[in-house]
Image 1 (tube, rainbow, N blue to C red):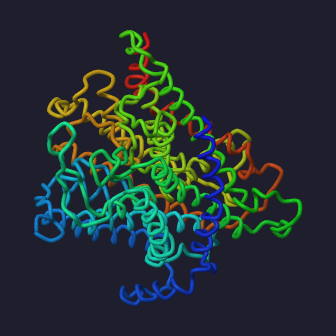
Image 2 (cartoon, helix red, strand yellow):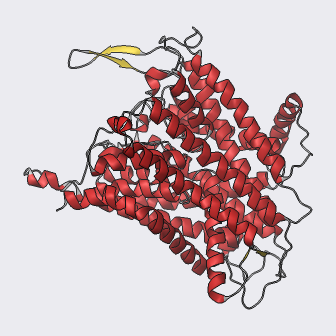
Image 3 (cartoon, rainbow, N blue to C red):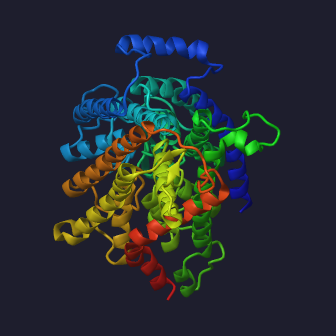
Length: 580
């Protein structure tokens, strides 16, 4: 527990200055790095023909986002199909099959990084760099850009706009993702993560056999896969291998990398809303205001608190479940005192494995330092549930956008209870916003449950389920929850490199990403046109800890109504059977 507490405390210390830095970039304010990055951005804008002073409506912004991503999907698909060419291909990797290429390119462009292939044997170095690493930067920046535009819409006025997608995309890459990746990548190389273009090395093992040790630009991929909450591994076993994650220090670097930007995004939100709200208050820096208001902004504080409560509850359950061990060991006369170490690395232990598991599915990264398929039933239910919720910090930007939808839903429910038109951020929430909010919230469980029902109800596709019974259903649910939440981790155990799984998970990833973003931008565009209303005695304050608690209850109630029946048939039933 001490390991976990100290890790979280250090994270809270780090996330504040990073959030402030990202806020300055999103709001167009001066930063210490502007003299360098302004020149770099200027060259990129000139080559791309982008006018940095032009602005877009939400419709143009959404069209630019989807259109740019579509072109990158096409180019990436071509590279995967022709990767057998002898260019950065020392291991002689063949071109990728059609349906797998479709699944892979959709996966990495949607920031999911679901892998139906093994990284060391499925991709050439050319594909790893030109498709995988490139997509990890662009997909991460796309989500953050959409969130910044979303915040501008929420806090703006009718004459405002949501910014310029191309400007936001470039600034996020050059000023955040690239410099952070360079520093983090060097730290990983220092800890022993390879970064070269050598072919695989054959070595003699102590058992007298031959083993191939993977080489390649591992560190470059490793840092952006965490920093961009991507998750795809250079190797099939991901960050559980010493090549990708050799030490406890590298484990902490990767852990903080995937936590940093989603948390910073909430702080950015609080500061941007604080700047734009036209409320009759004293100047911001007055003696009676608390440090937390200065640091987070009032709205950011309540959202961060709600996300933090959800995270801590999930982490506590996962850690407790894994600490209990497997009762089958006791039945066999073996000790349970060390908890469940099945599928975990000894160098990390239960505490860091549970923390990594909860973090990677809460921040929708998808990387793993242990095998989730070997978790206890309740321990495995937590990462599955957090992907079903998709609001426990979530990926960069998109997690915050999803939580804002629940905040709108919460003020609507509270408004019905007191007989008052709901308001959020000083603007009335009316029929159009609620219809769009309900539609966006429903899409996520619809994708998970509909595709899961299709998978278990079609006899030809049940052949891919290698674990019959409760655990087999959990594997299917996890696969589609991971796809729809753009997470990318897997319970594994599924024979998922088939036409059915490649196409259905590809569709779940595509619709789970772009339908939500477009609808959320539409909500922001609708609210942007509304006038600010004055506060009254009946106004529900959304910047308090009480609202954070209300928000947590709304999220859990929605999860219970939507997912409890299927969770009861999967991990809960497996747990009851195991401990009967």
